[in-house]
Image 1 (tube, rainbow, N blue to C red):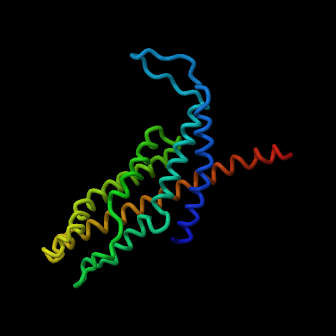
Image 2 (cartoon, rainbow, N blue to C red):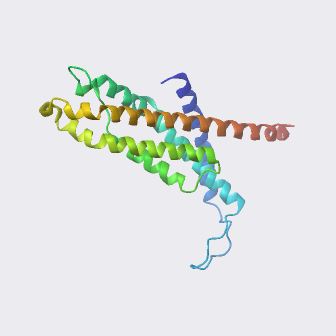
Image 3 (cartoon, one colour):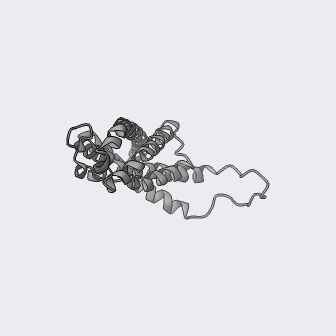
Length: 207
């Protein structure tokens, strides 16, 4: 993992305590005192409730980002193993490729569920949308090839199908990695903004 990725993982971990606090706060009394009729539009959320929901969403974004970049399970690690397989070469090595598209499903599903409420930050939400779109693209390209590699179909067609799909696989991986990088940048920005807001308040409390 690069120094930049390690820094972003650290930022993602910093978001987790905020997520826990938000979840505890959400378990408290509701800010809504009346139930709207079933045929009426839902009432606007009170500010404290909205803040808690958005904090929970930001925490979920940070958790998903951490799962996408962490250690040998990261998307980058999977892409490196795909490249080591050397599909365009004269003697590709299927055993070099580790991972499968099903490992992305729970991460993308959790990210999609968190996206429903939104974080209150348009650029951060847009970055998540980019990860979801690119992740779905990679899963669509990778899934039929995963079965092909598992069944050793490449032995029958001498890697013809793998070579035909190689460009799509590379583009799909790179596309997702770029979107993950953008999400990391936006998480950094949001976290830095939160620190900037908290610092004057902490100074007032101490003084």
